[in-house]
Length: 215
Image (cartoon, rainbow, N blue to C red; front, side, top):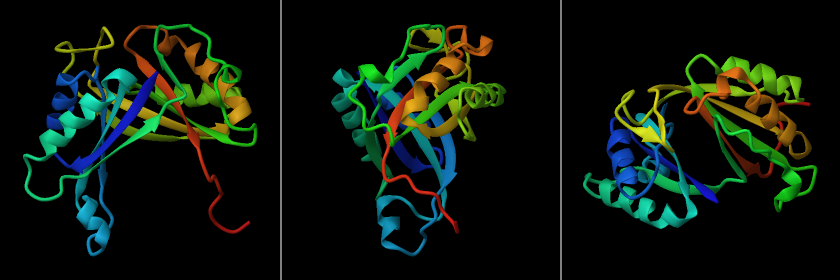
């Protein structure tokens, strides 16, 4: 089983904590740029000030979770003051490209059919729209695409035994639980997902889902 470790740190710190995580057993990760939104609140004490941020997403085996968390914490202690936040999400599935293994929600200890899954797809840049089109054909309503980058230069490191391509796109799809398996299968069947190293998929339970705005 795998865990998703999410680290939100000041801009420029992502590579250092990524290297620390890999030295402790994390096989790789993706960095997504962002910004803080709370310059004058208590949240700034948690590292969410109004400044540029980097979000490091690291998929790690359960056996390496504690060591990777400690390595990230130790690296961040080298900085003065608060350096960000770190939290963990259980993943219901982890699928790497080139792997045609079947994924069935019925085989997992999943919530009731009225709950939602967050399907996250990290692909080489330029393929997220193709993945979204395939997801729609399987019943997904829509998704969100954000740009990112791998945590190594092309050719100088490997992620689960395959070469890393620096520029990435992350597609996030929120879909009802009963449609998740079909959406994942549709993305797995894409030509752009057939080659090893071209992407990964991981899922997590979405809790307290609600639509925003007026009805």
